[in-house]
Image (cartoon, rainbow, N blue to C red; front, top):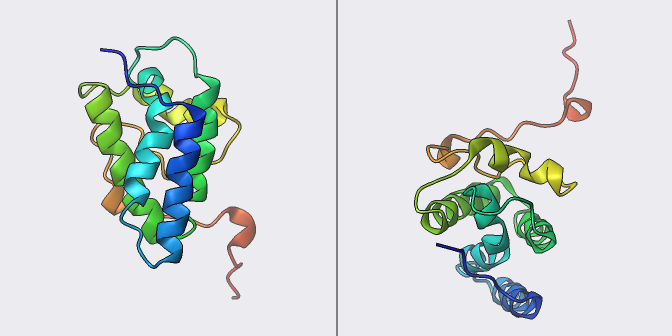
Length: 136
């Protein structure tokens, strides 16, 4: 089964709706917006597409922008995992999922990389340049 493809215009409208909902105090639509934006990637992650579609990288960048805080990253991680599993009929190529941010030239640390990825246990570590040295 080939994953549903969404036009860039549909993704833009969905992102605009999410921004408006967030400004109104609601963030319940973030998951559906993330799933729509990430839908271009699911075929590749499931092993159905041979190459990463350019629209996938655009969507992955949009997903990254939806998650400024740890709680949002955890929630979107779980949301994307359910999208990956549903679109790929439970198949997730862990190597492809782990390499997706690099293939797109992005740093997205909350992207699930396997069917059993536990987003609730995900630890958000600071990059080494932000870790304070211990004073002895």
